[in-house]
Length: 162
Length: 162
Image 1 (cartoon, rainbow over the protein chains, first blue to last red):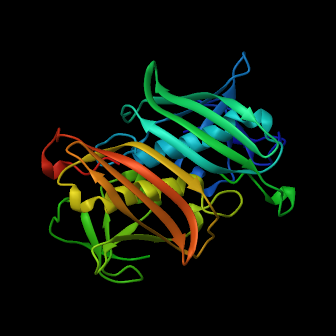
Image 2: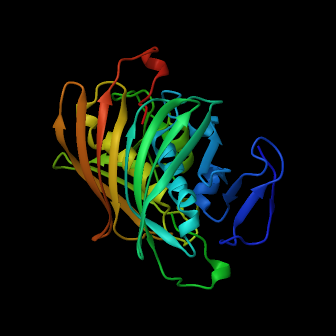
């Protein structure tokens, strides 16, 4: 839906900021093949420093009941873990644990947003929790643990491994 | 990778069984748009009655570290919840809770398999747990809770809502 233009690296070489459309000014990462196929999912930093993530529900996100697929919510939440922890992450990291509850369905056309906070940032592990909403309606709560990993390949070749 | 041919409904109108290729004889569901885009994921019933789920890792499943994306593992596990609970499900159901641990990475070309069991099948809720492996190597453990839901539309129109 949105054309994007690559910008200079801001922590990750694949960080991209939308320059037009509904998500103009929002950021995304483009190296994740699985994520790129299912997104783009977007995030931005609010004036109060908090991170907001969002995507607009399309047909490709749905299940057989015409609601957003559970796997899609979980993929978006996994993306959100890394966005919410962006201030703490200087290198690649991987998700090591994740938990969630499905509170309500969302349907095609809805704007789905995630917010949350880092509950602890340690030397190795970063703990994050968050909530996904459509407007004021809670859809999904989640918590996850991210582990920092050492680079195995050149920085120019690596992105985050969600 | 595998051509599929529709067969008569076996519990769900969108159940499809592969007739050739690596997954000949394995089953999948085709109504889930999100799942279809990211799969196909397959399942079959073993001689001992247990359910085995599988997919072959392709580039579209990967993250920036060239391993299977966390969201892909979670989507496959969400699929596996419904496959493992297939004997208990006579109608649509949704995931209400899910938890997992990421133990190891899997890479392009690997055959990734999930097995598990129903730990409790109640009137409303079905509890499932499982493990994802590549060969003998454990990759991912998960547990999930599925809730049976009443049909809102004609049976011919509905699939499972993962």
